[in-house]
Length: 172
Length: 170
Image (cartoon, rainbow over all chains, first blue to last red; front, top):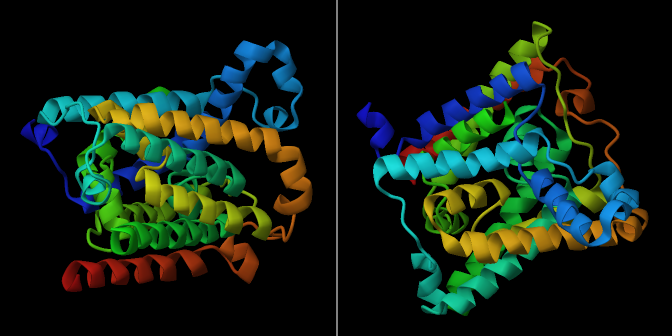
């Protein structure tokens, strides 16, 4: 079972496995893979701490009730699965500063947290605005040949590439 | 079941390397094609599998609705965030699992905040922007008014060619 302890698997093997996983989720749970909705529900769960049942009256949380559901557990699973994988390969370690980030922004952890927070806000807004993320639209949606997903993925990468190029080739 | 599938997905993402900021940024800078290789391969396998299951009556598609005001603008906003954060909602969970604390304390809190901000603004946004240019046909086969295999097969072939080109020339 040493293949479970490898640091990296071929992207083609990982991709094939993810494609098959998506078939299984459709078959057994009648659900596509996705992640951003879990964050939307979680924001509602947090709001419930302050505003109790009034949150359920809010238009957006009527569409996406702030409850723990299949996808919420799926995202929890991602954390656990990644943890197991990293433990098995010995790659698990605490890290605050990704190497490439430091190339441009130096080694201030505070700056990285601020940057990650800012980027995170845009991801949170953008994923709900477009109705999905790179898992929901990028993988599940595109394999279903959904118009919204193909368009979303193009925009994700156009925006992402332009931003990365700006940060790493102009700002740097 | 969601938990189990998630664990498998998280395991695969981590083995694939895409739970790392460096790998994702590397893709956006067109220096490291791991992300695209994984996505395209999974789409190839998945589209064949899911449409096959659909033909057998064992699966239903759940394509997401969208609109120009929603999908395009939201997608671009996501993209900008993607380039700054270096993770997406799925990979960020994976990053947390492997110990990347910038993902936990900066990123996840940011995504939750962003989702909350969007939820607050939703009623007005929906009226003004999100509802502009809705897609009347949800899938490409429907849009082209053809049977789905007529789209699936060429898509798989084209994606395979793209992967071949990336693998050999980049």
